[in-house]
Amino acid sequence: MALIDGGAKLKIAGNARKDPALLFEFGFRPKHRLDVFDTRIYLTNIQQVPELRFFVAYVVQENRRGKPEIFPRIFYKDLSLAWRSASHFSRTDDGIWVGKGDVRPEFEDGEEYLASNESTTDLPLELMVAFDELSRKLKRPGGSEFTLDLILRKSPADRVEPYSDFTAPRQRAASVKSNLINRGKSVARFTRKNDPTSLKIKSGFEPDFSNGIIEKSTSKSKLYHGLLKRFRILSTNQKIQYLFISGPKHTWIIPPQATTTELSSYCVRTIDVVADDDLFIPGYEYHHFEETRSGELELFSQIPPGYVGEICESDDAKADASPWLNEIPVIQEFRRKVLGKR
Image (cartoon, rainbow, N blue to C red; front, side):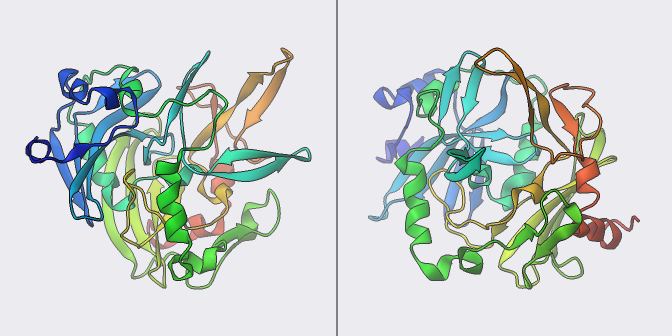
């Protein structure tokens, strides 16, 4: 509040831009403060609606004139248990859809379409433990889905791509070739389709299980059957970092991030680490039938065919992805070298 009294501008993308005081009138006052690199973050207490568990966040950064600016954002927890920054949102007949950052072209049945590059909204791995600890402070969080209307830019239901305030900082950073990780090429890929054993990681970008473990933590999850162990691990060349999560029945990897320190106003890194998405499937992933426009049922699955495990007990729209994960060599190596398991 002192920053605002001192002239710092609240730069709001959603409906509250017309009357910023609405955020405080509705009770979205900062309760916690985090600092990472050159960015300061104020968080409300945790909020909960059926579709989303989230914080209202105030991201404070200095502009080019050295003056602080305040960007209200929504930070939410994903199925993979990573915390993300919503880029925009829309309302559909099925409820709320939260924008998942930048997009890339993909092809299916000979047709090109835009798909979300979800890891572009992942908050810094350095903050994941803090968000988990703060999210457990309230046993009965309040919340309203209309909070998103106040803070996020609302898009048409068919718009996947984010707006320029999300993409422009990324484009500027990527225009400097020296910023790019592995020259913008993939650091990890599967050389054979639907074969988890065919993973190849670029030399130098492998996780350093011997000397690269820089953070250990634990948390609990009903979805993942209890205690979870987390390990943040540097690559052998120290240019990127991984987050491995292991529970009683699953081990998976959060998409790696650069060790760069520049963050956009969405509190996400501006430089990507390119790698095959199938390396970062969470323990449970979406696998269910959806009704098409013609009224027919069609299988929607984010687990490679042939590796779908049992349906999740608490959510029949998800299935166990461990048959795929357990065959990935780097996960086997992690279990052996770090967890001491066969």
